[in-house]
Amino acid sequence: MFRDPTLSPPTSSKRLFVIGLTCLILLAGCGRALPELDDSDLGGRAGTILLFDGSSGRLVRSVGLSLAREREFQAGEFIRYVTLPVAIEKRITNPDGSFVCRDGTPEPTTEHGTITLRQALELPCRSVFREIQRKIPWSEMIGHLGSFGFGSPTELGGPLEKPGTIPDRLSGEQAWELWSCVDLRVTPLQMGAYFARLHRGDLPLRPETLQTVGDLTRGESAGEYRDHGFAYAWAASYLEGPSGPLTAFFFLLGHEDDTGREIATQLLRTWAGRSGCSLHQGDNGTHAES
Ligand SMILES: [Zn+2]
Image (cartoon, rainbow, N blue to C red; front, side):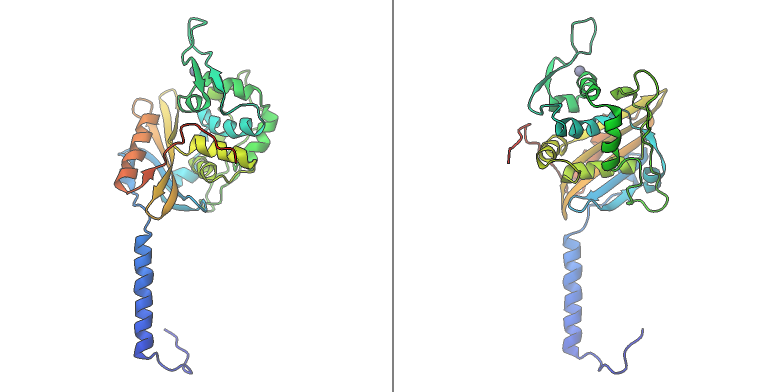
């Protein structure tokens, strides 16, 4: 090690001071340790787990990062979490209103009846989100998707990160339809990073929109995509961790028989309990006007 010869050697009191300071820094570091995370938290499944710092949005821990940043998937029903803030921002949807599910057979029997927006989001109700989406032209959604971080790398995953795809046009008559939104392609890293932005209110939207959307999404969110046996499922949650708030994102890849949103949610809960993180408590759907 290089030492400036003009400097006198440290005295013993200086040495003690340095040792003491080092111990303090180490102790502080231990106190603020991040929750542990490893492959076993996926329950033997293929997938990825991403942990984001709740304040900065930095990716602080991961399992399976190569899958998260290098594989692009059809967005499917995940898009309801993108539609939600756009609809509230544009005042297309009243977050305190009631919504009627029009799915179900035979008509006019409905599957979910009259529900709140939170219920429509969490069930999820295709009918309610289909109605909301129809009021937002795809040409407008493109701009929102771009400003929310889709269609370009998040820059959290290094140089190998894929950008995903926001198509200029959607193919097929029912293309702009929640459950068949297959042309929009996203990486798990983009999905997780988007939840981290939703949770900490870091999207280019009005403060009231961010508050409402934060209230609606900081609890447990989950979804799945199924196509001819192939399936993926994900769960996201805002957590109070030992070192402060975190966004956790679990993504499972497999066969539709053993990959579902319930499994992803359960794995997230199990990991959170083991690692001393508490789940964010919902606000029962009330939205403070401030
Ligand atoms: Zn429904």
